[in-house]
Image (cartoon, rainbow, N blue to C red; front, side, top):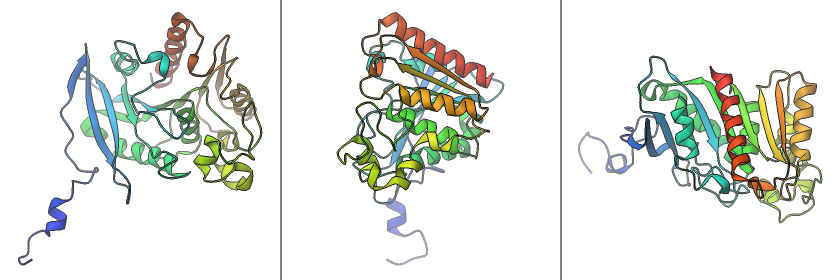
Length: 295
């Protein structure tokens, strides 16, 4: 190839997410617009990582606070725009409801355990928050007012992000029925089993890699400067024992960090067995907690 212009390899490569044009926003629900499939990171040897954004349609005078949502799925599967089986039929969607309340919502991809092991998914969340901060002026965001919100495995990752990310530090966390300790037997989980979702996340049975298991345990990262947490867990959870949230709440309280623990009577994992009205109550409480933190 001759000439002094860009090489063919450079020309055919997709624009880097840091400066790629944003897709046009599409109206979805009243007063809400969506930006779907926005690339936020290029990971060498992996698929592009994307996020969806829900934004209030009305332009505000000041940048919007942000909810960074992290989906569940045992770190092995899941969709970024899924808040769990009990909200899939909602219209408007839970994310549209959050946006209609005056907050931006970013639902992010992260590498699953079949693609990469810990700390890859946590690194991806850090990359998403970095990208959202980098593009915050274009998007009208204030990422210093970010609340991370996650359910199940996503709640585990959201807890780790809230407890360890510093630039900018999250303003708070809403955690639904999430693991907090990958080092000790709790409920149906045993750290010696190499076939559990936790083992697949770590790349080995947790007992065989105790340092990595501790690094992946939010309970081990609690500190006095932790942001406020809302921990919500069903008292009949058969997949993630409620002691995970109880222990994390006790540790946060012991460190002098603000925490609210809500134990939901009669609820299994994913709010299974809970009447629709009570699922709505859990969501409303979570949204109210978020709005208080970023007001």
